[in-house]
Image 1: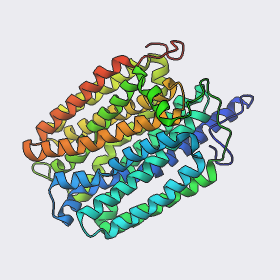
Image 2: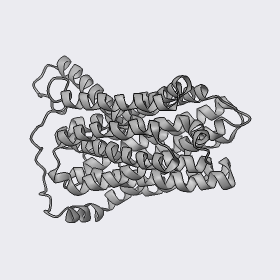
Image 3: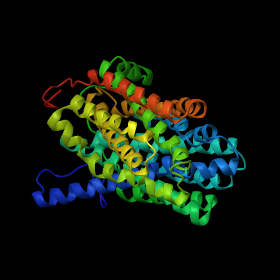
Image 4: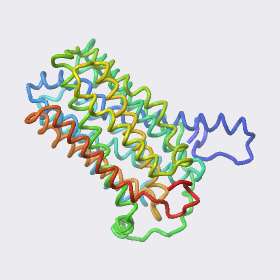
Length: 411
């Protein structure tokens, strides 16, 4: 992918200064595409209290409806994993982002919670198709040396969408109303499609060392027999389980006593994602220097340290806790995403699809389970559930070894 041709590839005989500027341009384009692909996913969380009031439902019901997009994302990820060998990457990404604008705009006029939920599922179907196909494209067309940076750039765009998407959503809803919020985000979806049309060009698929079996189920079986990939899929489930639980239901804590924040103030809270935009691109470098497992464990420890702070009646400490959870979980996600692409022995597109299906199912289950915990037992119990998910991910990370030790130095 490049602004003029294809930034996934870069001539090796290019002068050093041109390679450096080209790499920065490629990373920027990849990050912006990621931003515009998933900006709808979490932006709506910033206006959860307003939506709950508008539809007159409980926090758990509204939280599940908003996060129903993860159901669509999980289904779409499986579909892409199944049909991956037959999908043109560029056309698939472009079509997904164009179609995404439709349910986004219709959310502005959703008459009831059921309609809202269905439209969020439809959003998820489109977002995950674009997301999975882009990851497959990067895995197939980036060199081994460039892949870690490319995946980190993509996850960085995801991080940026969490910050600016939520902030933008809160500001729009506060000043222009809920309907205007969804119309503007529909325009952002169309902007993403335009960027893909301009920057992603068709290229020959990179040769793979192992020929993929004809049957998609045979490919899935090969992935699922790989103990490393199974562990990575389960880790993805745990990561989004914890992330959704934290950043969905903390919104209701922030508007209650003793913190009592207003809508616009909640939007500013999400500046806690700003450090993640800086740290997430370093995930590839950390893996190269420290190894996959040490990098992953360190990121989970950082997230775990932030959890107790979420229970304190002090806004600065709660914000610090949210920042640590964000930095840790995004770093872990960047590490796991790149790991799946490196370890898959055939059809990286289907491997990425299976990983993202597990990841988004984790978000859906986390929203449902932790929503009930929040409603019935309170925020402290919800935080305990989040901590257990991080512990499970840490235990599974023991299996994140590399088949070729030379690839990563400290596994």
